[in-house]
Amino acid sequence: MMRFLLLAALALASAAEPLPVRGIHLAAPLPDEMDLALRFIREALPREGVNTLILEFNYRYRYKSHPEVVDEPALSRQDLERLAAACREANVRLIPMINLLGHQSWAKTTFGLLRSHPEFDETPGKYPDNQGIYCRSYCPLHPEVHNVVFDLITELMDATGAADFHAGMDEVFLLGEDDCPRCRGRDRAELFAGEVKALRGFLARRNARLWIWGDRLLDADLTGIGRWEAAENGTARAIQLIPRDVVICDWHYEAPHPTAPFFALQGLSVVSSPWRKPSVALEQLQIVRRTRATAAPPVAARMLGMLQTTWVGFGPFVRAYFGEDKAPRPQVAEAVLCFRELFQELRRTE
Image 1 (tube, helix red, strand yellow):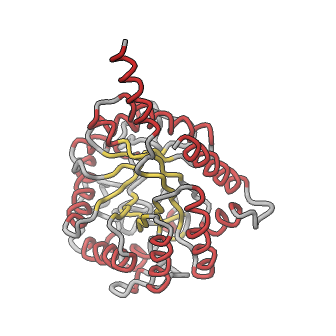
Image 2: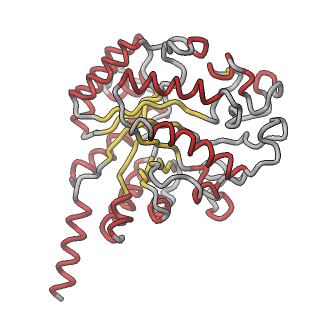
Image 3: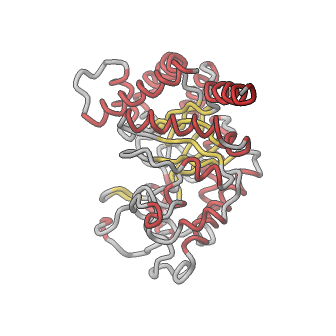
């Protein structure tokens, strides 16, 4: 009985320990939102207990190495240095992000990399105005693509002083296409894993750590989760091929699928990532805590915590958070509510 009580007490203590990652992901602010951004970082993040901020810059930064990829409006190096300084003041780890491999377009707009380097396209010359596809991808086997991508990563990390980098890599539907002279006929899991390895290897040389979204590493058929939050095109097997020091952001928005422990059991560190539904976020948090309290120590240690996502733009989210937008769009209001309720629970129990 005494042994049982001791184990129960240790489990409760472990569950109550502050999670290593208590984060939020946001699109980077626009240049005219910088004052708002600095106020949010300095005032709101410490108050809420946030210790990790992922800012998705993509091509909205004035890259010196490849100015041709810049999407306007773009932030300056001084802007990034001010964001990084505010994060240091708030004891918040800043992780810059470019969504790589997939998500190289949206609707009719092709973003900076493929707009300026159409030779990198996985489906060159196809899908005018991006009709008939979700998003474009770049070819991970193009001999010049990493020369550009690595330069962009270097600039963001140098400007922010970051020690981690988020490469996105979610919802990659165009990969190993017959239209690509390099990728056609190749194993999609190996192609996906190869890109993860290339990015991770580059970052490792900087003593930096790679973060990615986890959906392409889950099998849609086996899990029943579907083609958005898991993969139908054969990339799931890449989970066996990628380095074990990659951090997985396990996003699920409509239901709290218990996949975070699966990643941890595979030897990968993982954060659970909700969006709009507080009930989903709070159950994801409970899964993280239960696993940290009951799993073997190596698995428990890989359950790093929570990452709130937003997907509504920096300004709309922050203005709604501060109460400065009295009639925010429904998705904005939902994301703010989810953030508030998740972090209220984190503060209450930690």
